[in-house]
Structures are given as structure tokens and as C-alpha cells.
Amino acid sequence: MNKRMIEALIGGAILGLVCVAGAYIRSGSAASPVFVFSLWYNRVIIGLAVGAPWPAKPRNKALLRGAVLGLLVSFAFYSSTGFQDPVSFVAGILYGVILEAWLSRSEKKT
Image (tube, rainbow, N blue to C red; front, top):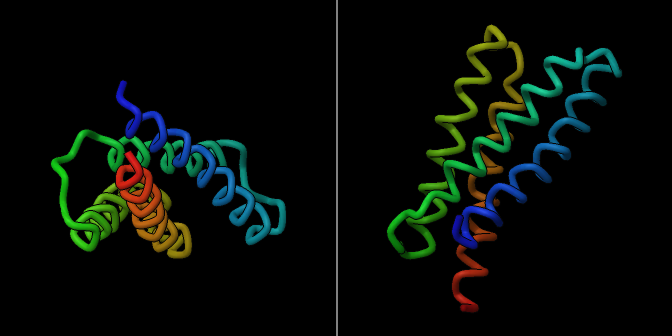
């Protein structure tokens, strides 16, 4: 695996923990372990998609790519919940952008 992929997977796992904490708080500590794990795993998959060895793009196009990938991956989770968790769906789009911003920033340094 290249550095971009490793950083994206780690970033997805960390953002997944943030998302799980938010979902747990929003649910009043009633979120099932399966739901929590699925939400976290979805964020790791966003990291996998964003971290793929994509061709170099200008930063604004890279951020758009992150948003689109976040949307596509998050939609799978959102639809599996019966469209009951729009906050997590929107967060997935933002997480795609955050990951791409983080990765494109670190790519400029090297």
C-alpha cells in the first residue's frame, strides 16, 4: 500500500470514531452495536475510496472528488438504514472532503 492509502484508512477510522460518538450521543446511548460498527466501517470504506491512487488533480477538483466519493459510499449506509439517518449521510460527504483535503495537503509537502 502506498502512503496515501494508509493515511486515508487511518483518517477514515479516526473520523469513524468521531461519527460513532456523534451517533451514540444523538441516539441517547441507544444505538445498537451493529449500527455503530456499520457506521464506523462505512467511514473506513470512505477512506479506502478516497485513498485510492487517483490521478493528481487541482485541489478544488480533488475536494469535489472527495465529496462525490463520500456521497456514494455514505448513500449505501443511508439507504440501508431506511433513510432514517440524514445527519450521518451528510457527515459522510463532509468526511470525504476532509480526507481529500488532508491527503492533498500532505501530498504538497512531498
